[in-house]
Image (cartoon, rainbow, N blue to C red; front, side):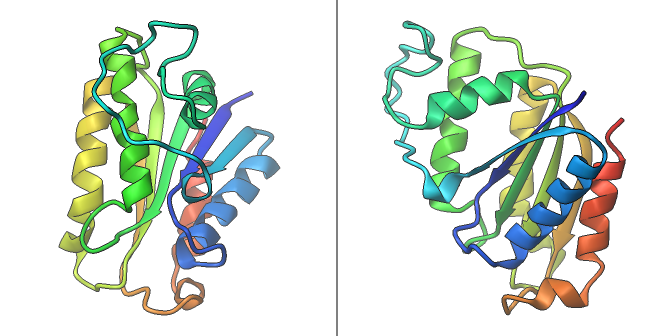
Length: 181
C-alpha cells in the first residue's frame, strides 16, 4: 500500500487549494492508499534557528513543536504532495518555516531519496509565472532530496473561494492521484 503525505499550506478551510487537496485525497482513498494530511497553517511550527543540532536527540529537530510529528510521516511517505496557495508571489509564511526545517534531513545525512512529489497550487493572478515563487523553491528542494516530480496542478485566476469549481482543477487533482502506481 502506498503512503501518501499531503502537506496543506492554505489557511482557508474552504478555499480553492483545500478543495483541490480534498479531491486528490478522496481519489487516493478510493484507490486504497494510506493518506495522512497536515494543515500546516493550523499547527505549531517554529522557525529554524540554525542551531545545527539536527538528529542530536531522538527527533530530527531539537525544537519542540509539531514538526517532528510531520517529519516522521515524511520519512514513511512514498508520495508527498505540497498543496499551497501563492501568497504575494511566494510561499505562505508558516509553510516556508516548515520547509526551512527540512534542512535537518540534510544536516543529519538522512536519506529521503526516490520519493514522488507533486504540487497543488492556486493563485489569484492569471499569469503562470506567478507560480514560480512556489514552484522554484520546491523543485530545488526536491532536486536536493532526489525526489521525482509526479505532476503539478497549477490553478491561476482563483479570485473567489469557489472559482476552482468552474475549472478542470478538481478533475486534474483526481488524475494526479491516478498517476500514483
